Amino acid sequence: MAVNMKGKSLVSINDLTLEEIYQIFDVSKTLKEKKLTGESHKILDGKTLGMIFAKPSTRTRISFETGIYQLGGIGMYFGPNDLQLGKSENIHDTAKVLSRYLDGIMIRTFAHKDVVDLAHYSSIPVINGLTDLLHPCQVLTDLFTILEKRRTFSGLKFAYLGDGNNMAHSLLHGCSKVGLDLAISTPSGYKPNEQIVKNAMKNAKYMGSKVEIIDDPVEAVKNADIVYTDVWASMGQESEASERRNHFMNYQVNSDLVKNAKEDYLFMHCLPAHRGDEVTDEVADSLNSIIFDEAENRLHVQKAVMALVM
Ligand code: CP
Ligand code: NVA
Image (tube, rainbow, N blue to C red; front, side):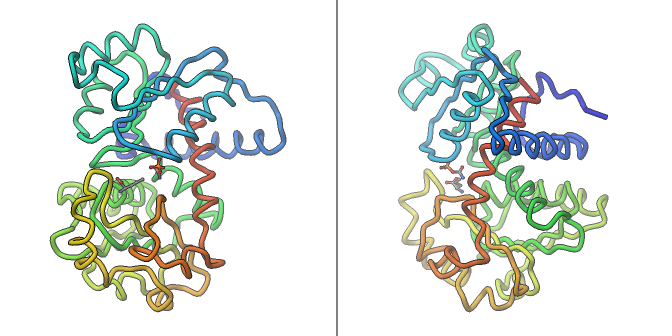
C-alpha cells in the first residue's frame, strides 16, 4: 500500500522508513519509464521549487531544475549571493517567508544544522541537496541504480574507499537501512562520524547485514560487488587537497586494487571525479563503471522524491 509522504522533508535517508525508501524506488522506475517512452507525467503542474545553492553543482542543480520542469512545475535557482539568508536574514524568517511562496525547497549548503532548521521552520517540504554531513539524494540514487543493475541488495558487498565524508555518512545510513553489506576503508584521521557508524551498525543488525570499518583497502575491496569512491577533498576543503593526497594515495581505486573485487563488480562514484586522485581513468572508463547511469538516475529519483513530497 502506498505510504503518504506529502509534506515530508528529506534531510537524511535515515529519517525514511524502509517502505518510504522502496516507494521512492518504485516511483523512480515509473517516472524513468514515462520519460523514456515520452508519456506525459506533469504531476506537479504549476508547482514551484526554490533551489538554494551555497556551493557549486552540476548534477544536483541541473537534475532538480530539469526534473521539476518535466513534472510540470518550475524551478527557481538562488546562488550564494541571491538571498538575504546568511546576510541580513536568519533561517527562521527565511523559512516562514519561502513557505508562503513556494511548494518545496531544495538546499545545498555547508552546515547540516542549517538544513535541519530550515526544514523545522518551513511548512513546505525541504530536500537536502548536500551538506558537509550528508548527501541523501545521492545515496537514494545509488541504491536505486544498484537495484536496477542487480535486482536485489541481498548477498551483495559494497566497498567504499576514501574520505569519511558526507557520501560515506549517507552510504552508512542508506546501505544499513536496506540491508546491503558495507565495508568502509579510510585513512586514519579521516574516519566517518562515530555516531553515524554506530547507528548504521544498529540498522544493519536489524536487517541482518554487516557494516565494517576496515583499515586495509585491499581487504575492504575483497570480493566486493560494488566499489565506490568520492573526492578526497570535498567542496570547502580545497586548500587541504595536496596534504590529503599524501594521506589517501593507498586508497586510490585503480586497476590493481579492483583485481581484488568480483570480476563483474560495479564501479560507482557520485561525481565530480578528480581523475588521477581517488580513481584512475582506467577504472572510471572501464566496462565495470556505471558512473553515468548513476548520474542520470539523479534525475529520475529526485523527480520521484519531489512527486511524493510536494
Ligand atoms: N553528485 C553531485 O551531487 O554532483 P554535483 O556536485 O555536480 O551536484
Ligand atoms: N564529498 C563531495 C561530494 C560531491 C557531490 C563534496 O562534498 O564535495
